[in-house]
Length: 195
Ligand SMILES: Cc1cc2nc3c(=O)[nH]c(=O)nc-3n(C[C@H](O)[C@H](O)[C@H](O)COP(=O)(O)O)c2cc1C
Image (cartoon, rainbow, N blue to C red):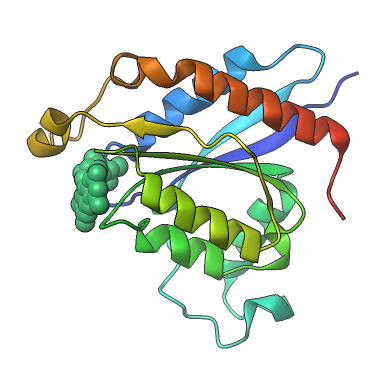
């Protein structure tokens, strides 16, 4: 029997009228289509709204691994059980949303040694937040993939702020890049955890 690998697709935005869950769901769909039956990868979309973590509320240093609050312990179990991560995040003022940083900073060892795909979106593809998230993933000792899709969100979409998007249509130009990134993810998972 072939066991599938658990990969969390973490949507970076929690703001009202966001598009992040739709974008993350589409990225996961692309990943499922790109994954072979011989190496099943179970992609689960994680909405940080379902994991409310008060801002920096743990008294200890996360690297110590001792968490006082049950919400942190639950988040720790969730992240520890995963073998890789796909971060799907918008760019906010050249960075990435605070909710994502807070979710990252609540833990430490749970992220380490695991492949991380960084997918950003924004007017210019979220290139600056992609760079920042890359550095933070490196700081947390993840293994970021070489291909970081930076998906261009049309200006009309940003201005409309309708909270709705058809990612397959708007991000069609990035499909090949995403498929390439998933091939890298599959190869990294096949190679096993990084020490
Ligand atoms: C606080 C904030 C800052 C933003 N900063 C940028 C930016 O630096 N570059 C950019 O291209 N778009 C920026 N935008 C526009 C976002 O790309 C757009 O609103 C997108 O839909 C945000 O993703 P979300 O809907 O999933 O939250 C910003 C939006 C917000 C709310």
